[in-house]
Length: 127
Image 1 (tube, rainbow, N blue to C red):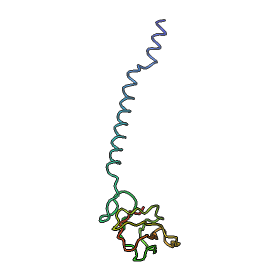
Image 2: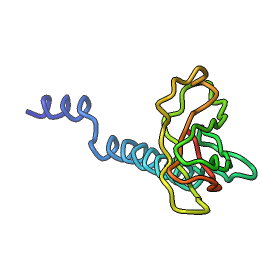
Image 3: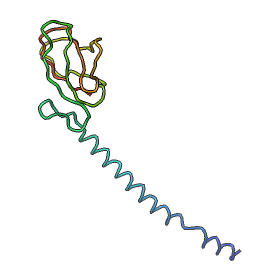
Image 4: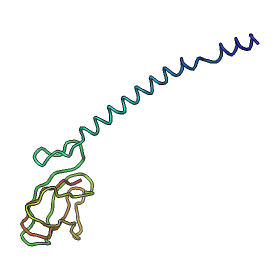
């Protein structure tokens, strides 16, 4: 019996000696993930119309809608791809802004919109 016991003791590592390093690695990984999440969550921003976008791919644009309602107007975005969304962030008057049904010959650089009210100053974030 003592022979078997001596073999087991030499070939089976002490669980405490294994658990401590594994726990240390887990704690370091957890800390790194928390730091990464804090950096990402704390520094993602759209920017502003004056200085532009910061670290979200998109463009700010300020335009005034044509005097006649429901008339096409073009906003240049130069994203290098079709815009996914045009989000008005400020409006000088209540209106709806929507995609024009006009075929866009330059979707990678421009978006064609219409507004339900004419002469409205708009600020957009286009992404």
